[in-house]
Image 1 (cartoon, rainbow, N blue to C red):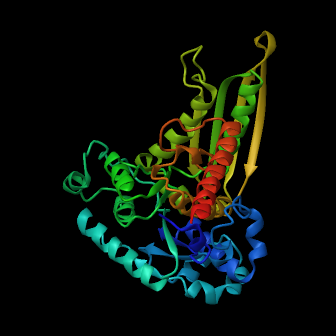
Image 2 (cartoon, rainbow, N blue to C red):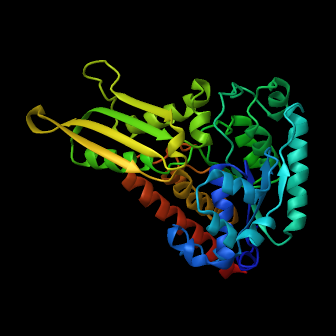
Image 3 (cartoon, rainbow, N blue to C red):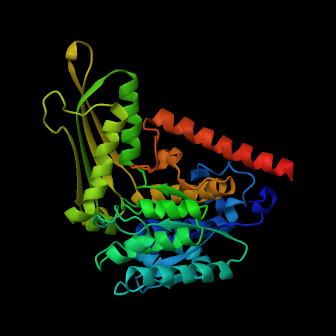
Length: 393
């Protein structure tokens, strides 16, 4: 049982799989900025004023894994998300973030898990006072086909060379008792891994971070539902030129993300768009467009009907920055996981649906209003649990 009084002395340690990717390297820059110029980061967090029993946000540290050979600061500059001058401000802090080589893919899954587990042990030695949370920021991957495996040993036996690498980090995390955040569209919350997380007293949050277009889609669909306006069609286009966009040109890798983006809408509305005609009328398209880099653009065309079935239409154009929108959410989720684990939550936490396209766990709130209210209730539950525990000590 966690002593609430001890939490303030134990900073958050973000252990990031895919630490040199676009979102992760932006996260690294944010962590570095927290130590020197916190005013650049704190206003963009939803948890900056929450969880007063946790260590200060400014004490957050980071480590992780990646297969890329270049140093972290060089990887950040290659991403081109922020200016070289801004990267230079935090060069010393970035060099202090330990990044280990990802386990070789020619190892079988069990040996990969052992390697990551040993790395976690060593990271804990480097940051002995910290509380670690594993963050999965690896690229989208094809479906693993391992959901029917009854336990971890069956996953080890069934996993082949093409199995998504995310599983090694997820299994190592829950085996080590670490909270797990799956910000990717990859299905790592297999029943056997969820069962292990419950045994090891670790919470799981995921899947597929909701950052820009899908966040606004949740807000708008909830608003249409409240006004009893019937949506008859919704076309979404995304263009982006970062590694994520290039990776998603593979249909097998994009399938999970597209399914998450489309399924979300029907869950909110309670009906299939285009159901009257029987024709598919909710479409999502993702195109890799190199000149755009991380500055993703999203277009939405929404057709709907009102009184007397008269048609109307809305056009929405979001010109966002993919990783700039995502990184603070990852930092927020790390803090949520510390609070939840301290309060005794284990396994999937569907109440964190605010952050995800495809929240895992039962009875996840669908509409924006319900998600926000559920998040407040969850924070209050954590506060009451830890306050009561502190009073009884």
